[in-house]
Image 1 (cartoon, one colour):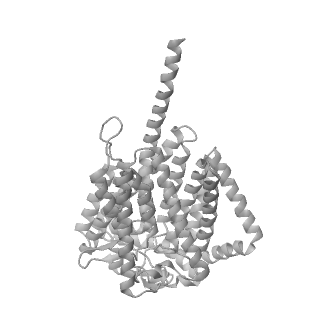
Image 2: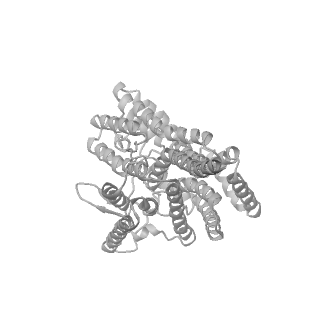
Length: 486
């Protein structure tokens, strides 16, 4: 899916050449940091730092390569990470066997089907670039993280780095909320796709913060995943300083997600906390109850907060308001997707090609008027039109498999080790829920987070079992020696 606009373009504070200089400096620092850590501390230690970098920088941080592609800072991170992995990474487990890549067959099937869809694309060149982008931007990240994570401690460090990255973004969001200055203004202007349609009028909801993300909804979606991660890390915190930091991080992220003014992320974080409250029996449940109590206190002490939420809900249910139009637009997209695919059996199978929606110029009725569908606020609807029903099914299988693994591991692993599986599960389900009403999949920082979390969900259970077996073995030897001495 293509990037969306926030509806308000941030003009750069600096001349074009100074903005480009800033990007070059950032890229040099990123490469130097990853290479330095890999050479001095080992490749595995670069993973948490890379995870943080992938969240921090906006899409505006890019160097245009004419005729080729945009070299974003995230792509610099991915290319550097892949090069270091090839040179320094280890791909074997403790028994000397080559570690199997999880989901490899589903990933291969999706790539093949995307190529089939591209071969029949309405816009072949655009679709081909999109497929190559998906492979480089996300599948490479999944591959490296899945193969290079060597222990449970690295998994926790990666989660901690994701939280740190979102805290930094939340600081930028707080500054944006109260000063109307955006960190994006430091970079050369970049016009995102989907700056028309319902997103063109987004300013009607006031000053919605987006930090370094492509849209406030995307920032809110990433926060909805980071908040449960921070709660889980709080259960592991041993020092007072780390506990203070994590509680402060949670509060700051809650303020930021409120300031995004985004309904989907609000619902996603509420559902995530509800699942954690119902299924978790350990310390994590206590912290969720504390969050709920603090939220209720804020709503009582600051009735304006509750009034804002209630008014937004009422306007969402009113089709005559802009919020209501935005809400109804999402349902119309599914109707249009089915209608377009029903026109041709081949298109129903493979669609019109990856990222082709914005070139189709679909015209149809919406609320009694003929309109052009120039924005697609649903990743599910876009997948239907662009890759057909088969492509949608393949993507669903690819995304739901790690969620199933996380749930099964939550049921099978011993407490409290299984808590992380539940957190990863609610993170993925939150993202999938947002896919139904936001163009959140396949671009942006939040998609990097998703594929990192999928890699963690597929590797953590095996790492936890291996470490548990090693601990049991270490305890058995002294007991055997003691018994023999007796």
